[in-house]
Structures are given as C-alpha cells and as structure tokens.
Amino acid sequence: MAKQRYIDTRFWHDTFIRENLNPLDRYLFLYFLTNDKTNIAGFYELPISIICSETGIEKEMILKMLKRLKGKIDYIDGWICVKNFQKYQNIDNPKIKTGIEVELSKIPDKIKQKIGYGYPMDKLSHSNTNSNTNSNTNSNCLGDNNITKQIVNYFFELKGWDNKDKDFYSKNKIIYSRFTRPAKELAELCDNNLEEAKICLKKVGDWAKSRDLDWSIETVFKKWYDIDLLKPKEKKPYIEGMRAFQKVEGGKWYIINKEGEIKEYGVSPDKIEYK
Image (cartoon, rainbow, N blue to C red):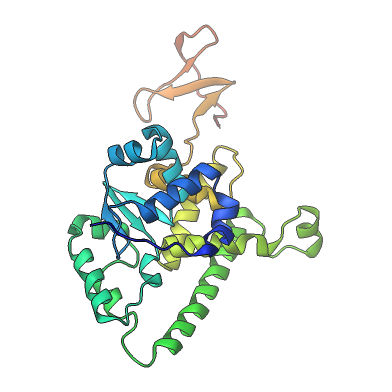
C-alpha cells in the first residue's frame, strides 16, 4: 500500500538546508523523508545498496553526504534516523502515538544505545501527556539557550579567545553570534548534554592544534564519524635536527642521519627537541 508524505514548504527556508547543503545533499535529504521505507517514527532500516539504487548516487558519495547531514539525519549500522521527525507528528492522537511506539519497538537495542538522543521509549511517553506541556517546553527552550551559550564560551576558551578586549574581537572579525547556530546544532547532536559537547570540542581542538590546523565548531560535524579515533599528533624527539630514538627506555640514544643510516649517538645529548 502506497504511503503519503507531506513536506513542509518551510523546508527550503531552513537555515541548515540553505547554508550547509548543496543541491545534491538536499535531494538526498528529501529522499530520506519520502522513500517507501520511512515511517511515522522517522527511524527505519535501509541498506546503503538500496539508497544507491533508488537515488542513483554512488556509495562513496552517499557516505560523504551522510557526514554533511549528520545531526539532522544519521545513518547507524544500516538504520536511518531522521532527528526531530516525531516533533512534527500529532502525538496527542492516541493512534499516532501508538504507531510511533510500535515502530520504535522494532529497533534493535544495540541501535537504540548508539543513537544517543531522543528515541528511547521513555522520552516519547513524557513528550505531551499533561497540562504542563507548555511550561515544560518553555523551560527546555531556556535550558537549550543556556547550553548553547556555554558551548560557545567553551569553544572561545579552547581557541584562546575568552576575556579579550573589544579591539581583539574587532581586529580578528570574531562575532559571537556567528557561533550560536553551530553551537545549538552541536547541543542537539549531543542530546543537550553539555559535558558530551565539551568532550567533542576538546578532542577536535586538541587534534587540530597539534597539527597547526584551524578549526571551528563545524569541524566536530565533519569529524563526527572519526571523533573517537582522533588523537593529538605525537611529538617526536630530535637531536641536532635529526630524528632520535631509544631502543630501550632509559638506554642509549640513536639518530637517523641524512643518508638514512641509523647511528648510535655517542655522547649524552645536551638538548632533545620534540617536534
């Protein structure tokens, strides 16, 4: 039986869609909203091979595009998760709420554990069940804004931009409001868990700075699939401009000379430079 999916016309005005996605990314985004595997929960199984076949996009390109969609649409071990999809469903309607719960019950536990935001059943059951809904929503919004500011402030701290005078920000063209949108998206990606967001920023910041690379909050999104593997570049010892090492910790030092030969460094090095 064919399904009908209605796309909000504001889709084309969404900041993330307009500023972060190219036309092909938008096409894939719409595909995830409208393909015949989608359901009322916005969480469904869909192999990469099917995505490639139905969209006509090669696998390598699909994987790159999924990285750009990260945080809005996630691909986890063969499962598509359209974040915030349930927000646009009328869960005041018992049939719709039950339908969402049925779809969520089909998700394997290992996938639920990996998704990390908004999809466990307990969150759905508390989403809109009493007369305090409006006050709860307002409270959450205030909390989100506070988290967004804390993320931006922590990012400034990591960049060495905190507690500077006005001339510094003006000279370097640093505008605080420019960072609130990606900070908000990082908060959403981390399910409004401030500590998790800080850990992500610290990992990416340490990795980038050790390689003398510029980085931003958006770098977290670009490195999301590799973030647990990111490590600061390890500095190596050099003696007189030549790479040095010890075969045994605390033992003799050896160097690799310009001809590529390994030689014992016969005297105790006065200065070892790490770079």
